Image (cartoon, rainbow, N blue to C red; front, side, top):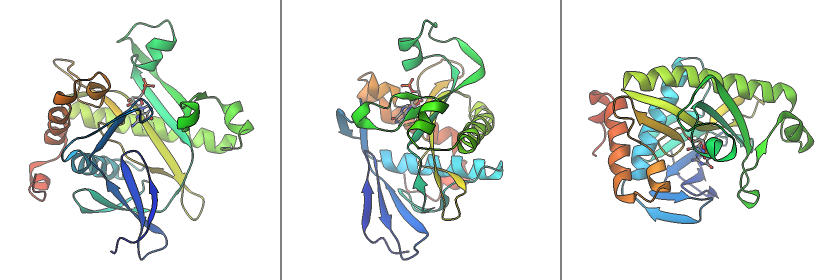
Length: 245
Ligand code: 5GP
């Protein structure tokens, strides 16, 4: 598979064309950003850890019946994926109240949320990812009601599968953000990534953070240790042997 032209360079990933029109190559870079990209650092091997973790999670979701963009991880930090037209909605699922939820609403940090909260934010740095609702999404012409319902249903299914997956690794899935796109036939497919960049993950015993929140809080020297810990817990040893890490 040949990596050809750069189509899109996001904050932490670059997307390239390949020799197949229906596929793209996604390169996970070592950049780490916070605050809509206001703070940016390079963390050695971060792209590789995220690509491997994200691919594993997408495989697990596929096995659970969720269609994802993943085709193959061809290098430790390069994924071949189905080309999607991305929907500019960040679907967020919250199992425990924390982060922007407790900053915005009168709810105590750490409160379990049952049923989980399904939130949708507009993926738009200029407007600082404002929260959406069904009416706003339709007014902006981003998605139809049927598509919105599908996004919510799929996000809750992802949550069910991943809560169990992380629980088996001694990790609590506190909350996460996912993005979807449409393939050439108009099917809604899970895209982007699911990694410690886009999830809040807490150690089940100690409640220590194992995700990007450490970087958001300025604990830059602890971030990679946390990502490696997630990698060590969720990637089986026989799969680790394939990567020179
Ligand atoms: P919060 O709204 O509390 O800041 O974030 C909720 C969850 O969604 C967290 O797991 C956070 O990592 C994720 N999230 C929200 N917005 C973004 C974003 O723009 N990029 C990434 N990578 N994750 C996000």
